[in-house]
Structure formats: structure tokens, C-alpha cells
Image (cartoon, rainbow, N blue to C red; front, side):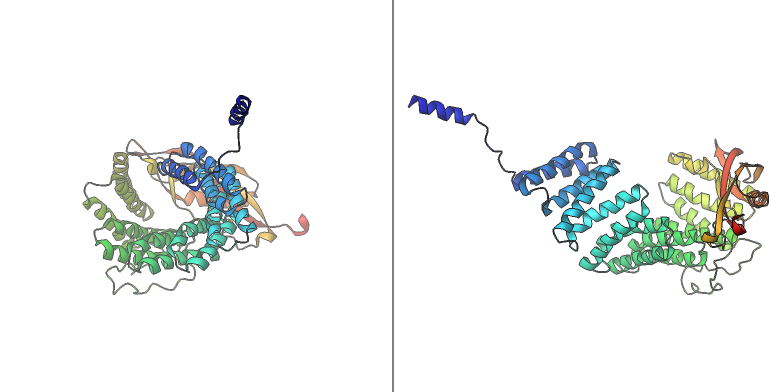
Length: 447
């Protein structure tokens, strides 16, 4: 009997198999992860996320679909910590598990695809990002409807990828879709429509489509006034957008192929279509819109100094481009005071280019087929004066013919800049550089 008891005692100290992980234990760990993640304590959340993946592997195996969400949580934490390589691997593993389980077209795939696309975007792998995000977007639309609100976090980075890839037709289609999603979910006159309208309009400005952009800014202004009143801060963005399109139109020329200005907005409260638009002067409606934006910000107490400073900059830019330099410098000085009160004068710490007409052979203006042309460059160094002019121009690098270098220098001579401010006053800024890329026709016979 004594011997039997000794055997039992010996068996008691021999380690047996570990107890199986339970759902309750995993849920507890998940709550710990969420608490750290939601508090933005990503360093603390990371080991918990890894532990949750390990627990799920123990409970279900290394290839089970139950791992997809824990892997997505891990990938998102790694992404927030800028460990993009690890995030990519976590998301890719989640995608593979879903694919291998035969569920490539189900909702479980959207999170890892979205995370993978965002990771590629963060590392400037725009082609890869667009593929992953488009796949996630298609899934969202197929499973949740064409205009579901859940697709917006996927749609925004997809648009960014397409813009960076200069896939303009696709980018515009998705810009338009983002507006339609907001209109369908919230209603055409809801304030939620303002953000996608503004983003689309700013892209149109970048593409030189100023009239079309102004139509969207005017639409946004109507929405903002209906949602919050004419003195609402929501009107500031649309008003400055209207002012900016007039200024850019004056500086760069009207939108190519755009119809002549009409009375589209005469029947509305916001008639911002140009009444007179010539190459000799900037349209005064731009000043009116910018001044109205400043007045709206000033009326709100306490004043948002940063917003007021940014809004004053647009008014100053209008005056400078219109040739009213003393008035522009006065407004810039007030903007500097407001920005300083707001905590940062960064927008006035360096010169900002406002007007520059690139040479015809510039890569942005050339009509040459890139396959039949060679790319060259010209780098010019110069001083931006306290009046916003350029001076002391020197060509500091180029592989283009001398005649092409002269075209670039001439373009820079004619450029206008908002000057740098220091201690509230405009100052000269030497050592400013501009690099122009040119497309020149390939020599015949390779000579």
C-alpha cells in the first residue's frame, strides 16, 4: 500500500498536457488588447496582440479562419507602430487563410485586404495598394450594397493611390463615387457631403479644371449655409475654395474645354460665377469670397487663430496675384500674428509659389509622347524677395540644351511667391531651388 501511494505521488509531479485555451480566456485577452489599443498605447498592445494570435493557434490550429481577425489586429498594431514589413506579413497571412479556406469572396477578407492596401500606401507602393484596396472595395459593394457607408475608409486610400499613379480617369470616377455614397447615406444637403466634395474639388484644381471645381465649391457652400447658416464656420472652406479657383484661373488660364461662364448660380444665394473674366485682371468675386471667409472666422468667439491665419493667407494670395503687393503684405502680416497666436507660423516660414507658368516642354505641359521623348532637367537657384519676386537666378544643374535652360530661367523670373515672414515682417529668402523636368524629342537615328 505504501509503495502504491509513492507511485501516485510521483505521477502527480509529472507535467501533463497543457489545458486547452478557452473562448473565455481569449475574450479576456482581447479586451486587454482593445483597452491598450484604444488608449493609443500601441507598444503595450503589441505583445497582447501577438499573444492573442498564439492562443487562437493553440485553440484552432495555425490555418483556421478564426485567426484572421487576430492577425488583422496584430497587423493594425504593427502598422500604427510603423513596422510596415511586419504588418504586411500579418495581413498577407490573414488573406491566405481566407483564400485557402475557399472564402475569398466573403466579408472576412475585407479587413486584411484593407490593412494590406493601407500598408502598401504608407510605403508608397501605389500599384500594390490600388490592387488590394480595389479588391476590398469590390467586396464591400458586393456584400453590403453599392452605396454603403462602410466602404469610405477603403475608398479614401484607394483614391490617394490612383492620384499618385496619375490614373486620372479612375481617380475621378472614385471621387464622384465618394460624393454619391455620402449623398445616398446622409442626403444631398447633409454636412457629411462637404468633405468628399472638398476633396474632389481640390483634385480638380490640381488638374487645372477650375470652373468645374468652383461649381463643387459653390454646391458645398449651399450645403454649409443650409446646415449651419451663412455665418457657420462650415462655409469657410467652400468660400476659400471659390476664391482659390478664381486666383488659379487668373494665374494659369481658364479650364481647357470648359464652357463659357453662365448664370448657373444666379437663382441661388451664392452667385459666384464670373461676371467679367479677362487676362488683364483677377476676378473681383474671388476677393469677395475670401473676404467673406475672413469675416465669418472673425465673428466666432473665441477666435480660432490658426483658422483665421490660414484664411487671411488666401486673401493675401489673391491680392498678390492681382498685383496689389502692399495690400497683400499687410494681410500676410496680420496672418502671421494670428498664426503666431495659434501656436505655429509654419505656413509663412518658407516662400510659397503662387504663380508659375512652366515652359512648353515641361513634363506637365508637353504634348510629346513619352515613348518618343527623352526626359531632361534644369535646376535653378534664386532668391525670393520680400515682395515675392525672384532675383539672382543661377542655373545650378542641368542636362538640357542651353536654349531649354533659358526657357526655364525666364519662367522662374516671371514667377510670383508669397514671401517668407520672420518676426512678423517679410524678408528675402536666398537659396530657393526649383527643378523643372522637360520632355525633348529624341534625336533621329539615336544621334
